[in-house]
Amino acid sequence: MFSVDLCMIKHSDSPSNTLSPNGFSGEEACALSRYAGMSSQLSTYGLYGYNPAKDKDRITAKQVAQMLWYFMDGRSVKAKESMLHEREAFPEFHVASEINTTFLKSKKTGRWWMQLPDKQFIPCAYSDYLIASNNEIPERWLRSQERM
Image 1 (cartoon, one colour):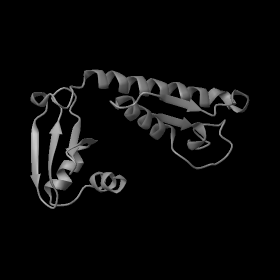
Image 2: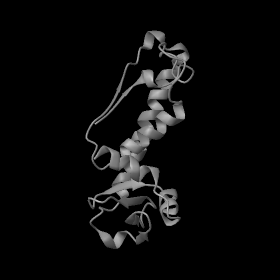
Image 3: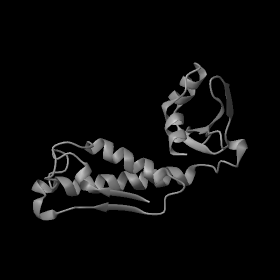
């Protein structure tokens, strides 16, 4: 489930949000929506807190529309992605460093995946692969271990 309260977006990008001048930018909110759409585990996406009475020049409505577009764009990319168990669709890159792990790169979309000690794969970036190749632990790997 991915739930967005529009109060998370800074006031200048979402004028109906009168609670705080700080928060995510409109671009960041769109990027998060796209990543949510790309998730293979997501079943629900919700946008909450829109108040048309406070929406000067309908900027917040446009922000919501763009977030929905990016979510749908992410869904379209997800539909093109192979399943991780289809290993012929993913070249493997093995890293033996401070963490011994395997990285996968999708032949279809170019997306990267990193294997955790429990053998599960999480989405990552090429930069995570480069960091691990330089005998450093990627922050994404550490954060996922903190959640376990």
